[in-house]
Length: 186
Image 1 (spheres, rainbow, N blue to C red):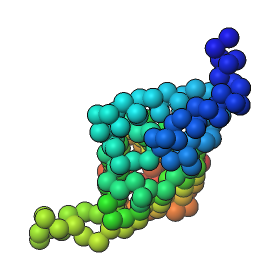
Image 2 (image 1 turned 135 degrees about the horizontal axis):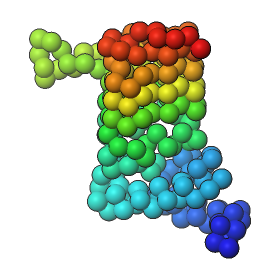
Image 3 (image 1 turned 120 degrees about the vertical axis):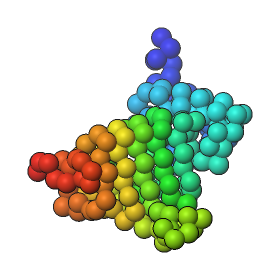
Image 4 (image 1 turned 180 degrees about the vertical axis):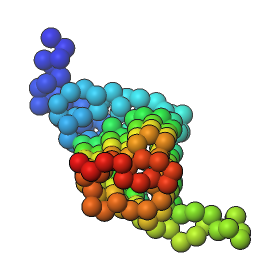
């Protein structure tokens, strides 16, 4: 009975209208809001953590309090992939560089995406940032790190614990290790 109630377009419209008081409307669309209640649960949690307790309060979409995003304006992703911001331990270091996440990509917990390293001669300074591009339908395994300037082609799978120091533009590969190398072509 309750599920039927929430399937009505008018009810979803009211919920989206309410949550747009707290979040940018462009993020309240897609599968998490049109096919179930998951997105609305994320919004409720987000109101508590982001708006009341002030964790990630500057981010215009629902985000887990256990994720760090340096600059939400430098993060490009599709609203269908809002699930990538509901986990824990993911670090998006993008204060001056952009991170592009392709549609359908999954990012596991404890992943670091880093667009700028520290200057070896002055740790108080960062080197020039380099954008990170992750293609469509990729999987970034738990505890992996993707370093500045990396480009991953579509359908690239990064094994858990990998350190990705160079690009794999061709895609359709499984990469793993430190530094990451091609393990298998798909």
